[in-house]
Image 1 (cartoon, chains in turn purple, cyan):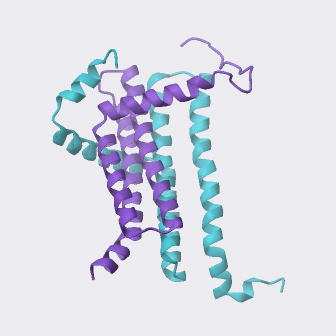
Image 2 (cartoon, rainbow over the protein chains, first blue to last red):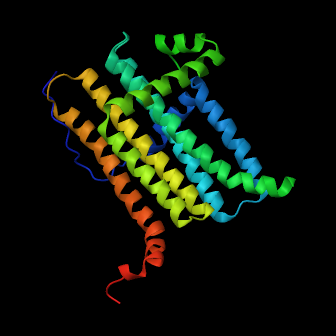
Image 3 (tube, helix red, strand yellow):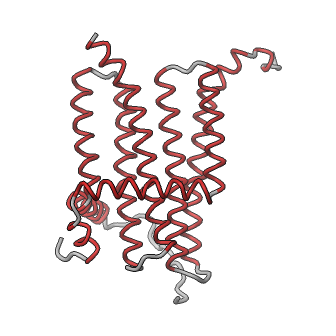
Length: 132
Length: 141
């Protein structure tokens, strides 16, 4: 490895505000194009939002639902990033690469399980009230 | 995208249903790995079990349950991503390097910050109820 020091940041505020928008948008575009699970998450997000308008969630419930959307989609993007980092380093199968990718996807699994339980707790009583 | 690397092409060639099945399989493998070899995951699970049983005992409202579940998911997920990042750093860099130190330290700082915020919100939810059940705990009155 090279003996490269971590670079010191000279400017506190970067004037290239453009890049702050550009690269995230590129990442989101990539994830939408090539990640199947991202597409599935977005479809579920849209469906849950429509259901939320139908059963008339309160403000607190909308906030909780939005937090859940945020961390599931963000976790999916971080998972994509870690997979890309591992692929960048090695193409061969390696136990540490395996650990890295598996635990990154386990994170998304844990996030989506907790979001699913939270969403059920929000929506189930309302749907049962409407149906029966 | 202008150019695609071979792993992306290989990923796109597998049928979608198989990809989904594989991703579930590997996720469960990762969970099992983390529970086997990571001390902090075990610790958090014990704390989570204690918190959930406290919730049943003190009778949380629905909103509080949802918040507790979100917090549990966040904290376990961030712990898993910390494990994952440590594995990535170990994979690519075998000797001591300042950038590797930054990567590992900030990843564990993320879990630290999240556990402090979780601790604060859990005490905001639970403390008033505990003080209601045991009024002698307010010794200054």
